[in-house]
Length: 624
Picture 1 (cartoon, rainbow, N blue to C red):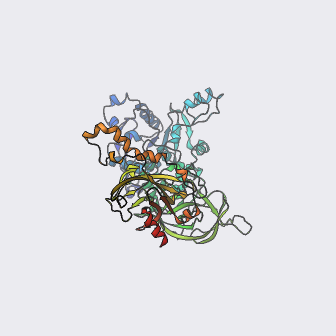
Picture 2 (picture 1 turned 90 degrees about the horizontal axis):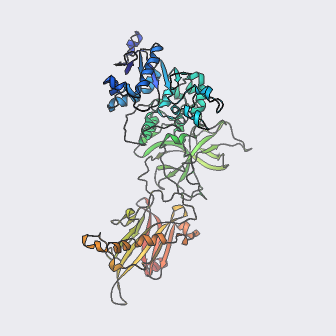
């Protein structure tokens, strides 16, 4: 650990003594003060403090370093630690070690000086007629704003641990006037940060639920995305390597490390603050998400989760595997969803001030035969309790480790039955959990050379090798039960022998398709390619000799997109038979062809099959 000598402003390095040394009174690291602040312009770096001092002294940030040392020296401390200049940030190994040790460094300090560069306490008298005075209002907002704001220090990610860890903390304004000790303003600080007094008074953070601790970071920001995870390492007693460049994955890694040391299921008690889509009659157009939150912001509404946490005896710890997070939940099937794949999973963490209430989340099975699930309906945290015969909440609650016959969702008063304890896998990375795609099946007696897809829309979602169109992952999102959505179109060239005229005949037609019934029933529509000049259509890309015909060729290439855009998707009405069979048939009399779209299980996966049949073949199938 490097410390700055407060008199010479030179760096010295110290190493913690062994346990024997400490018992003998030989402390390896001397008493030191520590600085907490927000970074500003021209901060003094390790290279600055070890380099040419005549240049360093003219940098804007040097004043803060000098005044910090002056304050520490006045308080009798020979050393101070300042993050900007005591860490060589050009060394990734040193930076990683420092960030993993930082919480303990703040905790081990004799005093923490919290420097609020945007606060001036003299504004107490000069602006008292405009606003009620507050020790942490910024100077500018007191002077110029109709609604004063708190110091930036309270909204930064790194300052969370700097508030919690030190045993002794003193606030200073921009001119190094003392604002007071943390205990002098502890109620005001709790109101600003939403942090419990237990934590602010130095209580053991391990006794607090994970969701409660995460909620403290929900309204904080860091310059780099990864730092939103790294700044929380000490809050959760976690050590892990730093991987700048991994982005939001850092926060997922942090939660995976937490899973290794805790079975506190409040880690899963997060939700999106804005309802992205409120389902109408139980649409299943859900966005998929893993069990772990992508950002601490989603714990903003989790401060009602029980403050104090105790281990649940007999419940296995969640484990991260290549199948996802293996976890044990009390679960029941949500019968309101026609797919039969949506479940409610109970979290073992009390909510609110009434005993016996537990939250639940929605999970969706990836397929009927899969043991893997994903989280859906992320804007919802349901609240369950058991009721007595008089319809009152039973204060003794229920045991989420044991099967339950019936439980009631408190807000909707909906009764859910047949709860069982299950061990499942929940995928975190759902990028490969693709929804069903559309597979074009070549009908008999046509061969692959007889029937060619010459255009597809959207082009980038079509695989010509397998004749498969894979829609975007979120294509079901927001799709109501009575709404139809178009997803793709194919321009198909059909070559066949017409016995009536005794020669080959070439026909072009357009096949447009999509989904309805919440995305679980496919539909299709076949029509002649009216206005399409097949003779001028080129399947190969344009070469140099063809550039004169560029605009004419462009018009031909855009033919299918134009047909797709103009197609009236509201043409389809939902019938009971169509929803039950998950199948749609469209007959094109002009072409004497029939298209059938159906949702099928192929090799264990859901697929929308698109069949093209001759009229005779279709009629033969119906009669058989």
